[in-house]
Length: 276
Image (cartoon, rainbow, N blue to C red; front, side, top):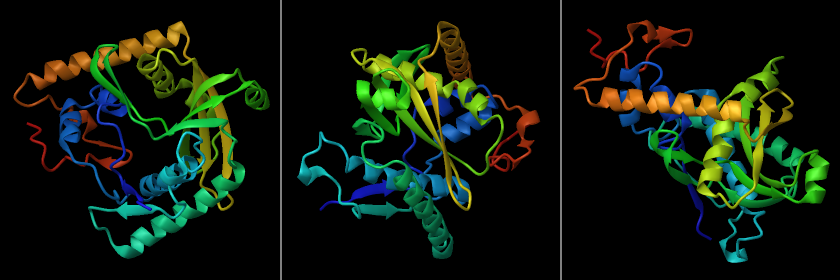
């Protein structure tokens, strides 16, 4: 059986929320970042664990899809890792071991059928002219449909939902508030509805996976955005698109020297950036 080829770190969206939001920070950094080919393990342990765990979940959920013919359904071992950066084997082993530990816990908490009928896994959707952005991409972790019985179990309305897996190191008192305020979870259903107007998308199911010694899980339902939140999304994306268009017309985008470092350290492009 042909394996699913998963290029580590190379599964993000080219024109997604993170790309457009980056133009509201340092314009020079956004420009550098947009030209960088981001493939392979990053060397950031938490990020790499999340990438590998997502790949394991992709295989797991694709095996549950009723729309796939048996011959198209991936074998549970049918995954081929591609790491173009070739980081040390010892580091990669640690990443895979931790990702596998989290995935095994996830599989126990979310057995087949827990998310209703899964319609798609890691599917790419592109929308043109989305709130001022010429092109906008989303790639939901899952696309599922909950019928009346399944929706009642979850305490929600029947319809389409977009589950999104989020890995955190520790439980924080403001996790729910932060998720509810995060505009990316308003953007997802809006872009999905624009791509599929015939589907009654109800919202996003944010599934937080806490990377504790014994993994813990929390589900947060973010409803389809209100008119007020839609205006916030529109204002944010329109401003980002306008800044990008203005900056790309220059020989070299502006730099914000106040953003050369933050609590995480120095900007990764610091040495190649001509700041003055």
